[in-house]
Length: 586
Image (cartoon, rainbow, N blue to C red; front, top):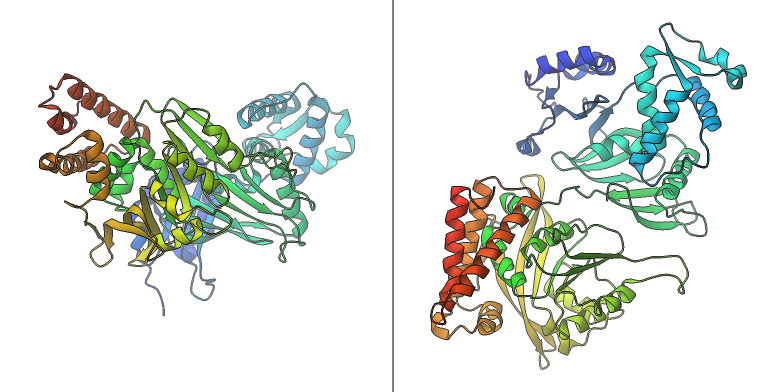
């Protein structure tokens, strides 16, 4: 069936203007416009409503200085691989002989004193050295003729038309991450996957799975890239240690499998992107991952020090949700995070960040189990574990039992599966301790109208363990309606956590228990008001929540004994009015 290609005028004039500034863009457009027509150009912001478009021919820019553009399109009929194409339009690469000359000359000016601690410093040193060895000239150069006498040249003459592109590729390959640099600069990329020799694949936040124009031609090229990359991030791979989990300089997680011994198709790697600024709870509500009432409910639970797991399958958005709701914790709390690879980004100033260390030797390695035991001696108000999957789960439950609230992600698609994994080897949590876990958020990645979205399927209150039925007792406080894409609160008037845990802790009588539901409603209105005010930045949301916490504390301190049950509600109503006026979000 032939796809209709709608004509577009979106941004065409701007593309023409940019083509005059960037010759490599002009060359690319000259090749693709006769086949595909003019792409719609959106600058740096790609509209989310393009997720539902059946035909795509879109271009946007990710680096104005270097002129890096991204072109996403549907391949012409007859060439489909099942994937839409993602093309990184980079500056054209200068002759390879020039790179040989430059690298030979760099080797003579770089010394042991030129040690660097991070990528920015590496970039600065590289630029300084390039200035020492390059002499720009106005006429074209026969670089091949210079190779025999490269060591006699005081400087390498470089044709001015090649200069900017040379610097781009030297920085990209020597100070950056080479072929991956364009996709790592693209803020719309979620995952990057290299299954072996051939094309690199990505998952785009708007356009879904895409096949890129970036590829490794040979196994030798791929292995060399992986070895250099692993050494640069401080976790070198080898045939003796072929599997590595690590963190890239931008915070993204990478898993590397090296060699044909353990991967039949050869070396491969997968990168899970981590946003520099985490996704906020208001953004998740705006995307309908969960609604403002779910957010308000979790806000109360976390303020009161309840322990919970965010659980679901791989790539369901567990860590994103966990990171977002952490902002609800008391802003003056001391938080200890424990992870295999650094993903969590906590806004609280009193934050202790700990990572495991795998040296391959039990004597020198530091496991999550070790770090969790150490965390219990650090007097944290909250312990957050990146992911529980082994014996550290038992320590986490012991921490809960001794009054240390714990948050974590977990791989299980339902509460039943979660309990099965917790109570079976290697975690082995006694069933009698299950009630130390207060709530479980079940999240999943699903398709709606052909678009992959994340949804919280349920929020469950863990009541305890029934020895007669040999099963966990839990009640869904919230459930997701897949037909209407809405969330239903099933706990009003019957919530075990709100009434039997938090209400009792606050000293609320049965007659005043309605106040905790009123509080939840007002907190939900506050979340909605922040969305209406377009407060989506993670740190701005946290600052606003901290101001609200201060306001509630002030009201509670001034309230008399008779007024105390109503103080929180009154403070939140005041906060809502101030947000609507714009006072608390300045």
